[in-house]
Each structure stands twice: as C-alpha cells, then as structure tokens.
Image 1 (spheres, rainbow, N blue to C red):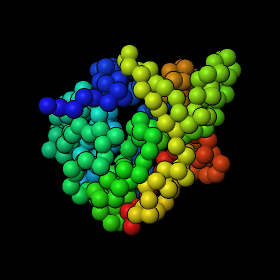
Image 2 (cartoon, rainbow, N blue to C red):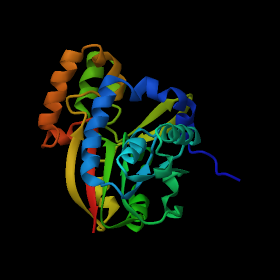
Image 3 (cartoon, rainbow, N blue to C red):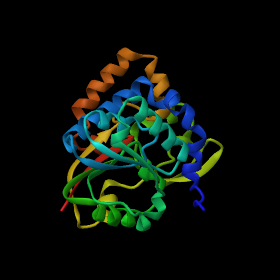
Length: 266
C-alpha cells in the first residue's frame, strides 16, 4: 500500500497539468530558470548522475539530460512525476531521466544509491521545517567532492515586501518575516518555511562546506508578479541586467525571492 501524500504533494498534484502554462512558460520564469541553468552547467558535467529534489514538471531534469547528465528526478507529487516522464520521452532522453516519488519529511528512510551531486530548484525545500535529516541523507547519497545546489525561498524578499505593501496587502507583504506561512494551492493548504542560509548550512552539518551564496530574484520579482512584469518586457530586461550585476554580492544575495546555496561534500 502506498503512503498518503503529504499536503504539499497533494496540492501540486492538483495543478500539475496547468503548472507550465501558469508559471514555467512565463517570460520572467524562463529568465530565472536560465540563471539557474548557468550555475548547473558549472556544477554538473556530462556523464554524471545527479539527484533532483522536487522536480516539478521536469524542466530542469530534461534540460540536464539533453546535456548528457543522468537525473534521478524526485517529487512528492505522482502527477508531476508523470509529466516529467512524458517530457523526457518526448525529448528523447527517457534513458537518462528516472522518476521516483519521495517525501521530504521522510529523508531518513530514503533508499537511494550514490550520486555525483544533487540539486533542488524553485523552493521545494521550503516544504519542510527542519533540515538535519535531509543533510544526513545527502551526506550519504552525494559522493565526497560532489556538489549540491539549492534554490530556497528566503525569509526576506524586498520585491514581495514593497509590491504587496504598495497594493495594500500587508498580510502577503509580511508573510515571510515570521519564518512560516501557509500556502493554499489546488484547494489544499500546507505550511511553508523560510530558513536563512546560515541556518540551512548549520543543519546540513559539517560534511558540507559553502561554495557560493547567490540571490535569485533580487531585481526580478517573485512568481506572483511574473505575469504583471512580463507585460513590460523593456523594463523587465533592465531589471534582468541589474539582477545579473548584483545578485552574487552582499547584501543583494540576502534580499532575494530565493537564495541559491551551493555546497560541496567533504
């Protein structure tokens, strides 16, 4: 008998079929993802085998597979995994993409063999509130010298704070500041957590050391503003240039929608 879905998995199961149209395919979303891809290119080389945590509809897994990287694409949502598998088959890379359902809350029970690295994009790690078990699991899974890249929603997003304050929605503007909020997706509610980079590094433990801390969505907005900004492409391109110039540097890497944390396994 299969285990019941965590609420986060059930929520994204409901929206899997429309997720790309609503988010992935939007202009700002593509730019954000291309920035992540530029970092993944540096981390993972053709011939490697990597673990993806929270693959969603498989955009990153298929992109890596097209470049010769073998991906174990995992998610809590069976429907998201089905979309990922279909995309891999349509792209002709199904031999390099293996899908597997995983619950982030059960990392201690993961039975996953050694991989050359791991990554997680677009805030999958925000669905759990503690990271010691995940760090221990990745310490076992990722070979020594392997790298991991994590895109995690930050506790302070200046874009979100200013945008929603200007639109008189103070609840949304300040929802991250307490470290926890509640998401409502597909008719399902689940908690969302906003760790600091320092906390995540500490809970991952001494088997990992920091390589890079970057901002992702400093001058580019969070996802609920993608469509609005996408109607003004000239402005969006200016913001993208500012993003490229600033996002790797303090304090901008602490003020973004997501932070990108790159760690190396000792």
